[in-house]
Image 1 (cartoon, one colour):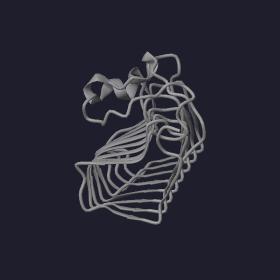
Image 2 (cartoon, rainbow, N blue to C red):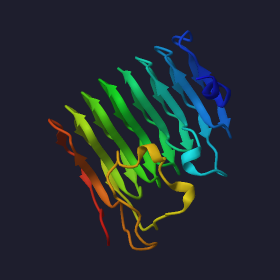
Image 3 (spheres, one colour):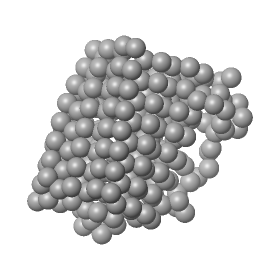
Length: 229
């Protein structure tokens, strides 16, 4: 925790309940904002730019959330670094109206239940929304535009309502450089949807990837130009 605090633009400890982080520009930090147990905090309308000159697996996340219930992360512009928003072991949080680009996953869920992901835009990332080991979610009205591998991914994610999301994109190339590889501890947790050769992919390799996930409901979503074209 001490290392994460030292390498964060803003670090909210457990005692910082109901903190407001608003209208800041946060650049060149390992982690942009780290919410370490600060219940009820709000991270709103910030510009967060992570590291570009390191391997992606060695960079931190735009916003990281650990065991912090009732947190709102809304209307931020996030780019570069590892993941845009990463959450683990939390509940009852809301991720709304963020714009995220040039990261690995725009939103990455681990063990986070009873939460909402709505109105976010993911552009030109490796993947859009990686929802893993989480239950009872509302995932609605999000956009995945020109993400490389997938728009929506569900692994051990159950009882989610997935409505009004849009996944598609234009021509773009794969990137297999060392700067973008997944951390070793996460290889094997994700499906193998590896990069294609530049210029061969007209959209994400998979619009939606579902495995080991049950009782999810899809309504009124829009998917186009996925797979090799």
